[in-house]
Length: 204
Image (cartoon, rainbow, N blue to C red; front, side, top):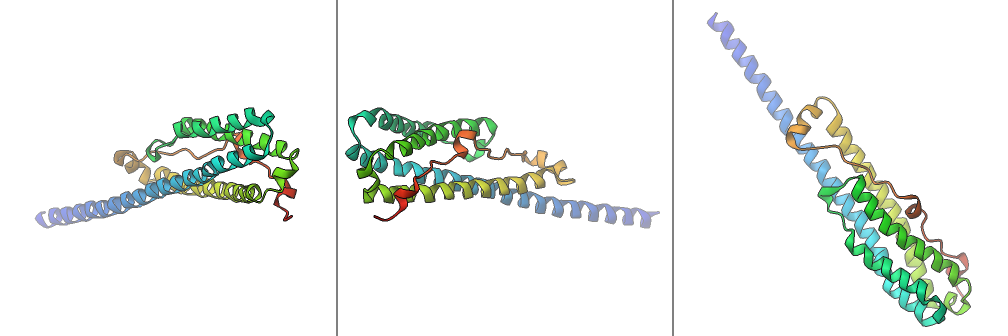
């Protein structure tokens, strides 16, 4: 009887030890995935910031070449650019609501830049300006970076969510404070990157 009890205690202890080790491993795995999500979101914001950093130089170049009639558009771009600073998103607060605010501000800037590209067609001197063409090349490359960063972010969010929702880790995820995260979905306006006229990119 005593031997049976000892065997039971040993088996129970082994089970508890296995669960403890497995739980620690699962917890550490979720921590790594959570940190990957935060890191990838930082890359998304960095890519958008790269585009924003081009705006002051772009505005100054346009202002020096375009006529006064375009000042309203230039002022709109400046206002949209300044508005970006009010919608920074903390990596700990990633959800559909905050994404929507972020994308609204980015979409408004994209729309203003799109209108600028249309206006540029009426200014041969601006299109032939080497500084402006260089900025357009930077802008085009930045849009590619943004798309790549968003895709990479959604990929790690998906991996994190699979870990959080898969059985039996889902039983422990809630206890550890890990919750499902929302993916980044660009608004229809922001999905359309500013189109750079091809003849701007051609060397003169």
